[in-house]
Every structure is written in structure tokens, then in C-alpha cells.
Length: 157
Image (cartoon, one colour):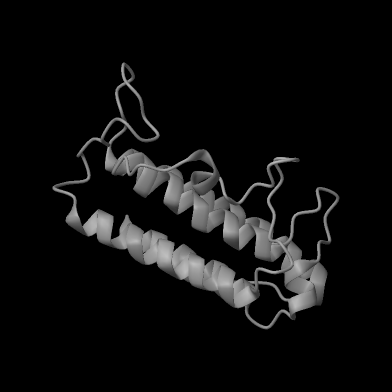
């Protein structure tokens, strides 16, 4: 399953390659999200599910949900946050997720409690978390397919 995640991480980045900063920060959709916001969202998905979720790293809500604007709940990338900053955040969170998965005893290992998962609920297994993250990537890669086609006509993988 980790190899599938790497495939989708690469696919998402490939769909952003060649877009100008204006295209990365602009939206072609009624909902208003931008490709750069989606990339930041995926970095936080990894953070929320693997670091805060699986490892139960202490994290305040703002750190865990830093892709959302507090006043609107919408994804956001402030103007002072560069494209390079967001790409670096994505690379760092992806690398950290790979480390977490590699260090796990098995895919059936359960997440720790105390972070995202609180007792008395039974925390999910690593395989469940990875499957959830994978479906997030697949869904959002499809969204980027549409945005890219609307932006410059590019289609395909």
C-alpha cells in the first residue's frame, strides 16, 4: 500500500507541474479551491492521519488542521506562503509518513490513543489509515484532472 501512496503523491505533483503561480493560486471551480490549496490539504491529511492519528503526536488543532482558514473552514494558502513553501511542506509530510509506515511493526498495528483517537473508541489499524489516505489521494487526483483540463486542456495520467 505504501507504493500506491507514492504513486499518487507523484501523480498529484505531476498534475501541478507546468502551471504558473497564478494558475496554482487561482480557481476554475464554483467551490473556489485552488490547486495549491489542494496540495497543502494533502500535506495536512498526511499529518492528521499518520502523525496525529497513528503516532498520537501531541498537536494543537491549528497544527493538525492548518490547511483550513479559521474564519471560514475553507482550505487556504495565505499570500505570504510561497508555492515553494507548500511544496516543501508536502515533501516533508510525505517523507515523515514514509518513516512512520516503515517503523511500524505491521500494517495491522493499531494507532495509539491520545492524539486524534481518544478512548474509549478502538483506534484503527495502520492499514485502515493508509487505505483512507490513499482514497483521499485518488479522489483529489481526479479533481486535479478536471482542473488541469479546464486550465490548459492537459488530460491523462
